[in-house]
Length: 484
Image 1 (cartoon, rainbow, N blue to C red):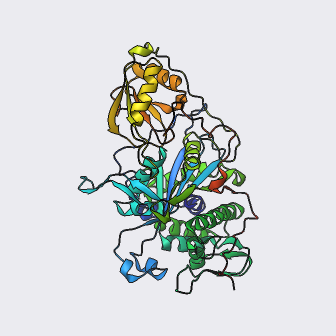
Image 2: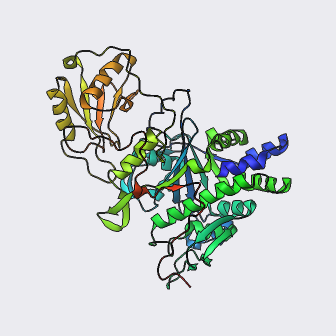
Image 3: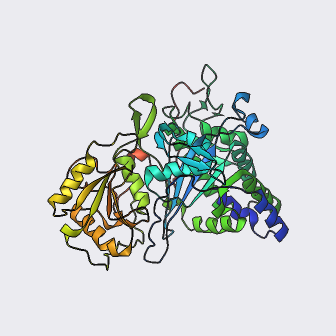
């Protein structure tokens, strides 16, 4: 959304003003983790998808942010990533997907290293609220957490705080939102965003826009899932508003928009100039509103605390796999390049050495005991006599086969074919010393690799609450007890 604003704000700017805007933009490291997911392969036209993590910070560390909510005691506290949305732009630029993660999701957080000399180390945590990742060195740790969970290569991030949301909403002139009944987000003990609207559609801006984006009490069932749904409605409406009012009235308004946008964001170094943001915005604008699909990661209550959630097995896996494989969430086909059979001939099955690792301990679940042993046994039964267990524990959402050099690609693909794994699960990696099979969270039990629900023509699971960007009739349901 921010880059769409920048398109409007920088058109025709002179060199000195351009440099001024560049100096406004704050930058930080992209990934503070130890590993990154593999980059996706190009499609038939040579294009690759783009994955951008949008982060909303709850920081109260400036007077502007403190005035908008929170307590003085919050000043100086580590930032929390209270809004996290993964934006996926398809390789052929025909569609866009957005996946939100509720802030109270419990996840393993990887080891993150901050500082030019790596002098600040945040050790891995076996289970923590996902919003805590931002305070472990910055946005790069939130990126690393998503990377570890989803196996999706993230190209860029953008972070914005409370004050940035308010100032940009003011510059735009208001975003239309709708409520089915009168609503006042305020509990008897003073909790809630304070949002107060009468039934119908209203253009919200400034502090009221922030209230809308933060409202939990008063929307639907009063959970973070309801808040995410309201945020999706706002973003879809904002996109339509920007496209319908591309001139925004006057050059002065355009300049104000550019100022607010560039002062409000922190990005990775790969997006650190107006030119790069402008180019990205042009790519995003290629997608029509009715090919944008907003979703929320499907969740279930955490077994140790019903007020926290974890990714829902099956449905969350399907959603992430669809993004990984560049499948549109609305079920319409896109131009994708099928995985190619290697030109490197495979050795005889009984001559292929395979290291099998147990990576099933993901999404808040403990690893399946002896899983590597079981799958190594399956391979041995299929004639791969040299299959052996590798005791290294590498949590991975999706089962994969890695190989270190081109002369082992054919061998790796032979293992995939024997197990019924798609060729897209086979990739080259310098981390592998030989053909390595990591059994992921998508294959916790059974001898046969489970068929995936993520395939061409499939849609996002209903539990992800998909919302189409062209839906102008979307209107929030109001929670009982919060009407007036």
